[in-house]
Length: 375
Image (cartoon, rainbow, N blue to C red):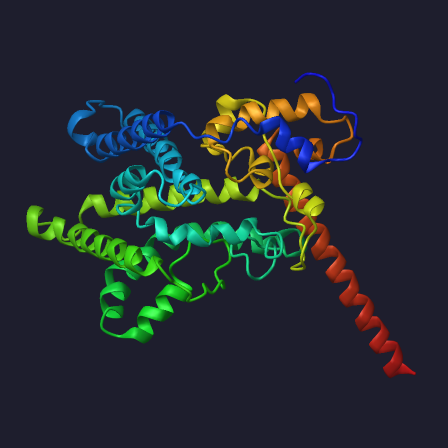
């Protein structure tokens, strides 16, 4: 595998030959990783919630520092657990049924992100829809204002509330009023970046799965609401506050990760295979850091776009094989980045440059109009 391939341009066929033995997922790795992540996350969440009862630290600053540390650790474990939905959508139909059920029970339902909300992710991998209006997981951030980046990150604090309202209110109402049912499906049933994304109504066999998951989420929401007043006699249950803050924190972590997954250079047009490859990024270095913010293979996002069905536990092996065997000027090498922060700064700089160009263009047009009027 160490001998470099002779071709100077990137060849998908060459790359496929290098990773053809890596497409089989290992169920033991999936089960162990997911259960460890989600159960530790739930345990840390409870430890953070009940810290005043067991954390006997008299110094208030130290107490809140420890509690904040527990909160951050909880968010990182929960982020890892939720990202498994990204793997599940690429499983072959009819496989890993037990794993899908366990993920929804322990993660998807209580976090209000049941698996049906991620099914349109496949559109993000279709060459003809990637980066277009049909791709809800894409924003033209390199050709937008820097406020678009700020706005996207700010949605992290709104999404948990919207998700709760969607399943606690709109789902039950929609069962009796089909128009609300259809509206909520099209506008509030997909994990996407673009808040204007409209999901197609072609539900097909998804309808039954969606209904079961919606019922489960609605029951969870109302149990969550009634727990404090009925069981504890509280007007405001501390669980509500921590759950909202945790939800917003995990969404924010995932949003920051997503900003580093692509260069966001599309302007809405259809991109070629090579352009899509160069628009996606890998972060193979410093796994003790990158695995925290880009867990379950998401730090190898360009490689994932090349081979969406490669299981996450083989992505590192696949990347090393490609880097050893592909030619020095291969396009694939241009997808590699060292630092997420550096790429975020680069994205911010591209947006700033776009703002400047748009401002200069507007000033030029205004000057032209003024000259015409003066003449």
